[in-house]
Amino acid sequence: MEFLDEVDLKILRMLQEDARTPFSKIASTIGVSEATIHLRVQKLRKLGVIKGFRAVVDPARVGKAVTAIVLLKADPMKYKDALKQVAAIEDVYEVYDVTGEYYAVLKVRAGSSDALAKVIDRIGEIEGITSTQTLIVLRTMKEEDRLIF
Image (cartoon, rainbow, N blue to C red; front, side, top):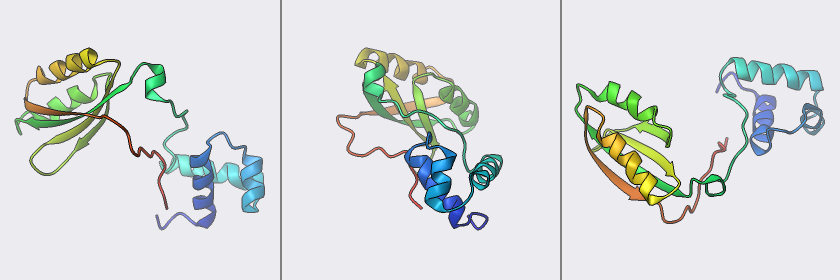
C-alpha cells in the first residue's frame, strides 16, 4: 500500500461506492483535474489494485436464493487439481484455501435446495475430495464487497 497516496485512496473509496461515478465528479470532489483521475485509474488498473468494474446483483432476484458454505477435506496429493475442478463449477462463487481441520471453504449459490444438492454431489465426485460439510445460510446478516481503508 506504500505506493498508494491519499488521492488514490479517495478515488478507490468513491469508485467502490459507485463505480459509475463520472471522473469529472470524482475530480471536483477530490480537488484535482479530470485528467489526473483518468491517469490514476489507469495506473491502479495496471497495478492490479482495481481488478474490474461490475454491477452488484441481488442473488435472490436472479434465481440464486440458496446460499451455502461448504467445508472440504481432501487427499493432500490430489488437492491442487481437485481445487481447480471445484473452482470451475458454475455455482461455486468463492473458494478459499484455508488452514485448520478443513482444506478449503466454498461459497455456493443455487436456485433451490435440490440444485444445491446436485452441486454438492458433483463436488463429492471429484477425485481427491474425501469429505464435505455443508452449512446452509438461513439469513445474511452482513455481506460486504467493499474494502475499508
